[in-house]
Image (cartoon, rainbow, N blue to C red; front, side):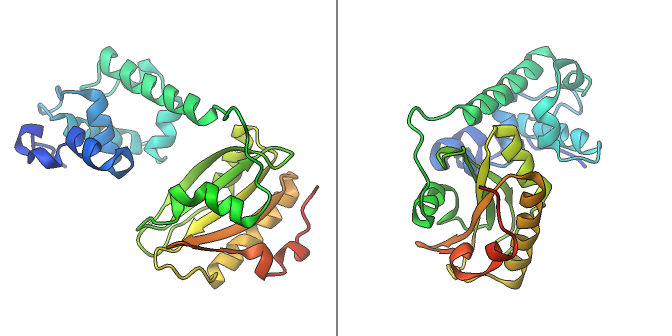
Length: 243
């Protein structure tokens, strides 16, 4: 794989910084976000910043794990083992990762109580309601159903996403939440659950029983509408959740 293209060869409107300014950080690929942190390329084949970001992700993926999962806990020493990443670039990346962790873990001064499917849908609207790709997210709640935060777990294609129960409950436990609401979007706007949605909900409710972490609902959002699986199915009667 080669990364010979230079940032100066890319049209101005397609460069990472300009794209972030125009469209927001969520629209950038991971390599583009890394390119902004790296600033300039160097080293292996005199890569551009974007190329160096792609090369970094490639090297991390050699560990047979999600590169972003590795970045969560990587050290300066480990990063500098990758050709082209010196102490300055390594510390910049780790500082950004740490800042992201602290922002996510920070709690709002007044925690909003999520007391209905409508309140849950409103809390997730920005992340899920109008997205062109299917996303799976979790609402993290305390014992009084007050909102601790939201987290997008996976992003899929225009028609599907994949999620595993361990990915969801890992975030719930890591955040210190004691209960959760899960949700995903249907970009088509049809918020009726599919057979796969029903099966996944069964798996998650069973896992929640074992972990004693109540799963309060599974919402489907799309194009201004939402649906609560707890309201339209008997799944919560099949898998009672702890108080």
